[in-house]
Image (cartoon, rainbow, N blue to C red; front, side, top):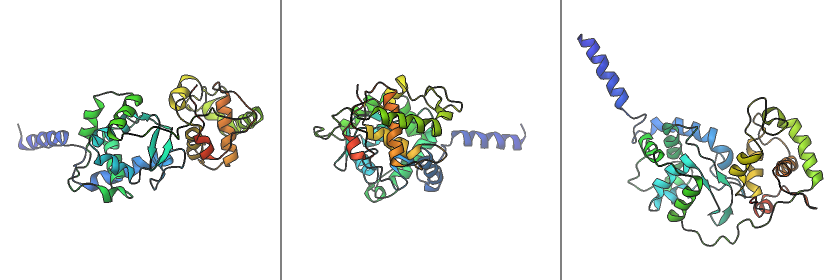
Length: 282
């Protein structure tokens, strides 16, 4: 066999055996981590990692706190893969939103890079232990083999970060009026219908269903603040956050009306603290 061909085969085998990036080479994951965070995480947790009050928790400081706990590293890997659903407290503030699973849409390389980016950003970098080893794609691949539900990840979180009884958890049903839902319907036709369809599940451009089991799985165990916060930060996709807070509240009321929640005599406010107390469990 010619020497050049032997060399080429040896080079190829070396490339195939090598990980996507070295755990100790920051430059290999920084760009991918920043890009993945911006596209998949930043809308909820914000570019500065501070989250949205009442809707999405801060991960500045909190991510490093999790990592420092026994089992925290394993929990973080499963969190990004499988999501989490349930009442949590971060910095003394309650949250009843759900984090979606990213394992079906993001690769092991993207997820490990995003974790490294978060753990080296904001206040997290100051709290990392001296012997911290960056996440690698192999770490995520190993965690991926143990498929978990969001509820099981929540139970794992309880082992890593035991919580006091959730006195501040959302305890009241959502509120909105029929008139507000009608305003939301008009806003929906102007801003959302092309993607999500007239029936909320038949859009021309493939928007996610906004009724039925999909809605129940995504939002049904959290607070109204989580749904409102998601709409406010990510919708419409071409101009997220550009509608007024009142319009987002009206859109939220419309979605609630189409998912079996009953109108009352009081409108849904745009205040996330009030929304945080409203539970979507039916």
